[in-house]
Structures are given as C-alpha cells and as structure tokens.
Length: 488
Image 1 (cartoon, one colour):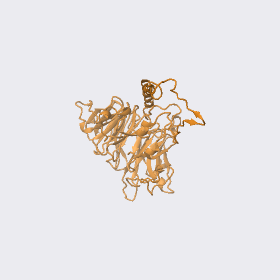
Image 2: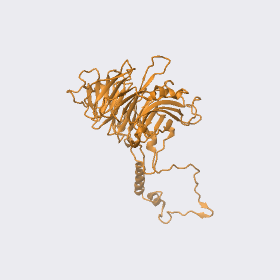
Image 3: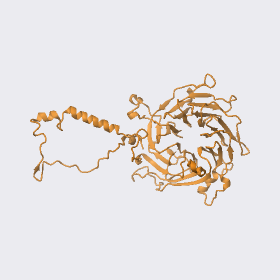
Image 4: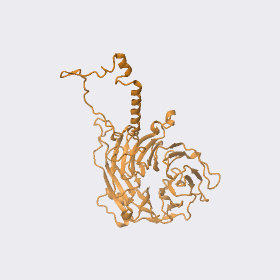
C-alpha cells in the first residue's frame, strides 16, 4: 500500500457512487414544497443572518469543525492504526507493478536470494527468481523442518490499461508457480545465507553454497547446486548424498542468529555469532575442508544479532548486538578486540546493513522501532578498551512503533532502503528527499517525507532486494510476498 493510499484510507467511509444529479422541482404532481423558514423568520435579512440551514453561524461552524476532526481521526495509517475485528487490508494494486503471494508448508522466517544466469537489469515479465529458505515448523513437528531451495516463476505484471506505453510485447499473463527441492532437517533454521563460488570450468554453473544457523547451535554448510539444477534439467534426480552437508560446524556453545559470507572472498569465508556474544571466522581450505579460528572474537556483553562483512575491505566486518552496540572488527588484529565500538541504541540492535555503493554508510534497526543511518567516517576508536563512543546518526526514523526485523540498502540506488518491522509492514525509504521546516517537525501525521511506500505483510521478518531485477523485493512472513512498486 503506498504512502498516499495509506493516508487516504478511511474506516467505514464508502465512496460516493456516480450518477445523475437530481434536479430540484418547485411543483411535483400539483404539490408545492413548504417554505421551512416561512413562520420562523419574518424578513430576508433574518434568514441571511441565521445561515442557509437556519442555525447561527457559530453553531454551524462548531459542528463542521467537529466533523472535520472526526474524519481526520479516522485516517488509517498502516503500522500505526490497528484493525478492528473483522477488518482486513487490501493493497492498492495501481501502486504495484507486480505483486504475488506464495505460501510454503511452514513459515520461512529467514531466506536469501540466489543470483541466476538469466541476465542483469531484467524488466520483462513474467519474471523468474531463485531463493533458499529455512523453515520454522511447529515444535511438536520439529522433524518436518527443512531447507527449501526454491524457484519462483510466472511472476506476471499487474494488469494495466491496454494503452499503457510501459506494456511490452514480451510480457505474458501467467499464474505464479513455486517449485521447491528440500533438504530435510531435524531443527529450526534461525538464519540462512547463500554464497556463490565461480566454477573452475567456464561451461559449468557456479557452485551455490548455503550456511544455516540452527536452533541447535550448529552451522550447516550445504552445496545446493544440484537442487537448483533439478528445476531446469529434465530427468535430473536429487540423491540422498546431495542432501548431506559439506560440513557441520560445532564451535558455538549456544544457538545464534548471525551469519554472513564475505562478498570479496570467492572461495568462501564465513563469520558467525551466537547468543553468548562469541564470534567465529571460518575459511574454506584448498582441500575442500573448512577451518574455524580456534579463538572466538569477544567483546559484546549481549547476544550477537547481526554480522556483515565490509563490501570493500576483505578483512573487516561489523557486528550488531542486544547490548545496543555495533562493533567493527579487523580479523588481522592480534588483540582479537574490536577496532571500534559505538552505542547506537538503548535497546537491542536487531539488524544492520552495510551500503554496497556508498561504503562509509551503515544502517541499523533496533527493538524500539528506530532505524538509523551512520557515517563510519565519524566513528572513532574508543578512548579505552571496551568503551563505546556515541556519535550522531546521519538520519534516524521512529515511524515504526514495533521492533525492526530487517533493513537492507537497494543494490543500485544508494539512497533507497527497505525496512521491515514487527508492525507487519515493509516500508521503502528515499534518503535523498530533503526536509523543509514543517517536515522537520514530523510532517503530516508524523509521517516522514522520506517514506515512499508501505507494504502490509503479516509477521514480516526479512526482506531482500533482487540484485538482477531492478526494484523487485521479496519479503517473508506468514507467506512470501514478491512485489515491485511503481515508485522505485
């Protein structure tokens, strides 16, 4: 639902129906209309003084003001107002270029998009996407959990005016299809991330690896290349051997939620963090093995909620924690301590995103509903070991009133950010929008002018931009929503 549509949606106010205006008649079948003011007012001056409805101006103005206030209070803003029993929200399809919902047997509250060989900057429809996700089955049916390697296809454009210039002869109407190849697990997936390594032979596809942080505290590394191959190769069969992990890492002593692959190490380098505050770096070896550092990186006083490698420096990553800090680490440091530590929130810092284009910018999202943007050039090493500095963010937004569950920079537009929150909304923001004096005080209804779009998705947990289809997003919650707005 767009910002404009969310602001204009009013409860209980049905739209006026079009039709012919009824003309007033002075005489119908010989009957005359009675002059309602004939006995009450003696002169035309008295009528004008009382107003057209016969009431004093002050009384009429007071009622009109009260009615206006009542209408204003009924304005429904997604993420702010609560639905009443029996009410549902419907998207304004005119604001979407594409919108599809696809369901899985169990909720998948963590997923990642897999790049494909269908080309970059794709704009034709129907669209095709590949992804990997981990399920959260009911506790009584934990053995039904799985890693789902998925293919979304038949993702058609929303119906438009036949005369629209944006329609292409290449576009075709189709029904969305979700295909999946599953890897059985006996535990819940807390977080899953994918990484592609180049093939040794140019005629072969790249190898696609996944790292899964499980509720049991293990990190499972799988090669899901065969599962992806099965979608587009008739007769290809997945064997039990294909479902076995390449490696099971057991260095963590507690479950965790933080995992990230380095984008600058093609062969594969992994950083993982757990609820005790411990962080480990694991590197792929020449013998197809995996080597984990014997000593953990420590320094957080709370759980490690998010980890992200620098998009520009091979040995640097950042960590976000429930202790309210973000720390920046250099794996070459002999001290095994963070290079910088910054207090970014008084609550848990749940998520974080390092801008791939403007690499000195980092976005964070916290439990209090605030998400912020930080300029790393303003971060300085703490004056004493273990201490944290408190710089001022470049931008900070408190629009959401529930915890931030996902934040991610647009892959090609350096001012656009997608944010998901516990208020069941996935919002799109443009930081390039400048504030005037009124907007600096919060704007209409406290809605920041940088807010471009509001999409409703029940229990939304993660959202990722598709790197090869400009403006396309996948969000996961009660279901998968795949959409593209006309505003981004």
